[in-house]
Image (cartoon, rainbow, N blue to C red; front, side, top):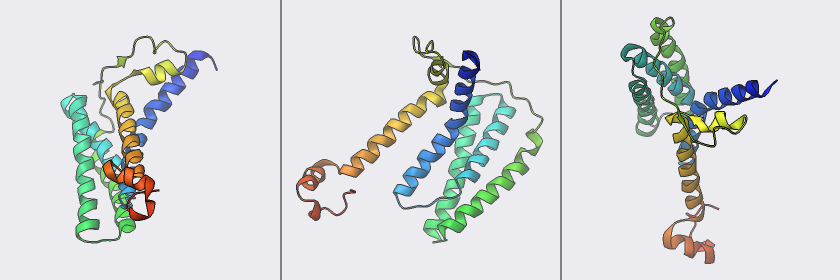
Amino acid sequence: MDINQASSLASSAVVAAIPLMFAGAGELVAEKSGVLNLGVEGMMLMGAVTGYAVTAITGNPWLGILGAIVAGVLMSLVFAFLTITMLANQVATGLSLTIFGIGFSAYIGKPYTSAAVRATIDVLPIPGLTSIPVIGPAFFHADAARLSRVHHVRRDQLVFISNARGTGCCARSASRHRWRTPWVFR
């Protein structure tokens, strides 16, 4: 394997991992709040097929991303309504939404299996860093979705660190008297 193949493989792996990183971060936040959402895969499939369909119809990839977000939010609202308002079992509801998302996305996506979408999102290269062999093209020759992921990872990290230590006066108090602040995560 030469350097060009390694660079292409690394870049493809990073592109393929972006949707999983977004879904994993969302599920991490949900589980931190005490909700077990096993329907993430169905939500991702519904978002993917909706985004592709909207992009194929309009030719605008940004509208496709907006359509994917709306589809994911709608599926999440169904999950939230069933589990929080109707007090349904989270595991059964999540698995049901996964199965529903797999089937319904296949049904919706059937007309678009032969549709060719030529719309692309512009790449935003970071000067100097894109010339690093193998990792330069994979991490620093990216579109807006890949670059926004760096912001999301950092935000999630700061939220979890601040919640682990407590915030404001509770953090100072917790460092001296842990037994008085049971709501501070350890």
